[in-house]
Image 1 (cartoon, rainbow, N blue to C red):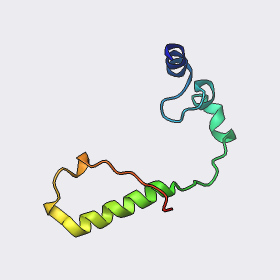
Image 2 (cartoon, helix red, strand yellow):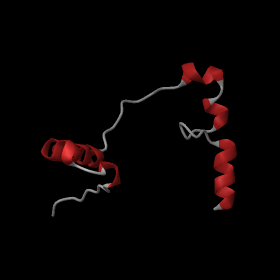
Image 3 (tube, rainbow, N blue to C red):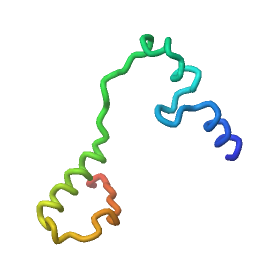
Length: 75
C-alpha cells in the first residue's frame, strides 16, 4: 500500500487522476476528448432526500452536516 501511495503521489494528478505526463503537458489540451457526463443515480436520490428534509424542517434542523446519508435499492 505504501508503494501504491508513493506511485500515485509521484505520477498521478490529484485533480483528474491521469498520469502527470499527460495532464500537465500543454500540448495534450487540444488532443483530449471529454465524453458526455454520466449520472450517479444514488447521489441524485440522496440530494433529493436532502432537499425534501430541508423543506420539511427548514431552519429548525440542527447539525445537518453531521448526517450520514446512504441509499439502497428497493427489493
